[in-house]
Length: 195
Image 1 (cartoon, rainbow, N blue to C red):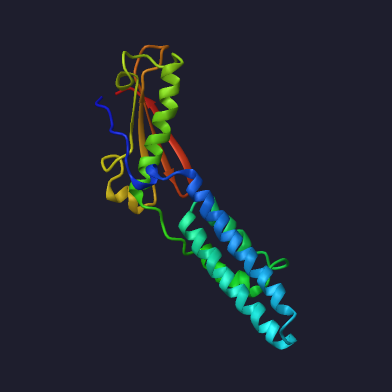
Image 2 (tube, rainbow, N blue to C red):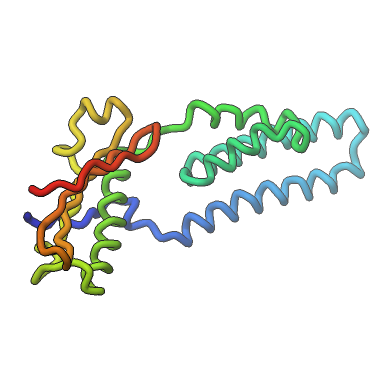
């Protein structure tokens, strides 16, 4: 098996601290807007203050939604949770986040496949270094394939991502191939089989 080149997408170049910094920045902006709202309460009539509260809730919901969509991942789940907290958060804040329940922008398939390959390659590299896989090189010990060949259009249309993994375990000394299908209904493992 030939080695698969390591992915070099923008997602792999991103540093985790930048993502965290964006989340904290969005949170800080929301918190400061409510502090400012509290200060303004002293100088406004009750009616004017109520209008300002609703406006602040809507603006902060837009800020939170924009940050969540940019950050993706677990942040989407947090946004979905916020949108259903009817007993805790005001409707003006929750309502704009309801779109996260059913219309989240999809992640690019190339980014998903690159991450699957990168993480599985790292895992199997560690197994190889511990002696669990047999081979004179990483390429002889294992391969991970998650590309256009394993994911033709008809598979992608079903919302699935197929990953093929070939392993040369130290014991027994034969090569094993496993196919992992990631889909809406969960993960299915097909194999092991021999090439």
